[in-house]
Length: 393
Image (cartoon, rainbow, N blue to C red; front, side, top):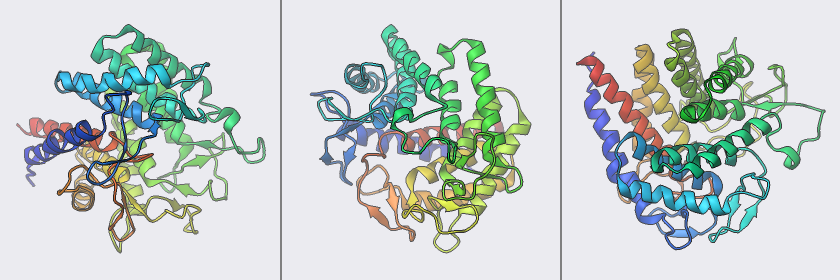
């Protein structure tokens, strides 16, 4: 069957360049104090001025990445610089650990209680250093990356609420983000470090967190990769599992490893079959592997990033494997995602829907949603479909 890959590519390209990026450029920039406002209502009005480090760094990454890989637009570099300079001045404590939240003027609000602020700082400043040619930005990126390596086995450190030793567990979030981060920083890392970290993270994700019998990605396992029968031990986070799989595909493609690509595609399809809401459509936010009531009260919400990461994984999986199941799921996911999350009236995308697919929070950004998952997914899907079009020619 012939698919119009060029038309789909144009859809993503137009949404990225003419809708989503202009929304953030128009409403989020704090030119006075630096950085970005991310708490934006449906129309783009600011409803809170606190600045969250994940989202600040992610917006630096987004505009730097597009400047590097798409087009050297001066306004994109200016947007990235506005965030990078603010973060370099205010983002870290005296030991170089990245805070979680700041006031609008840059005073610390929330301590550096886990390493994901450092992960996104390393991503952001790596891409910004490449875009702006700033030597100091390379140093910031490497310092943040080394922080992640140093803290990865105890990511919350002194801020961990869990009592030590009783029920030790490790989280999928750490190796999956480290895999993607390491590939993002390839140009800055020694070859040996790059290859070693990629090999270890792929092994850990595909061995310890993947249940070989069920083909599902578990969110938490024991240090040796076995399961624990408790809330956290049974937790399935469909969005995380699917996002992790396109990270793995990206690495495996670089290594011409078709076996791992197909294994990752299998996992994506298994998660989709497990997590799809057959009554209302869309993917559940959290699930219990054994069908028990999940601990998270928001378990049945439909979130923007879960669906966008699924579109990326399916488009990439189809391009790399040619498997028809990927295309069938892509069409299903495309129809649900574009019809429920994209806001044709005010631009950008809604983030939070209830189980029935109705808008739950009338916002475009907040503490967790910023200028990242939507533009990244639009860019990556655009590139996948352009590649498919070129392969056809």
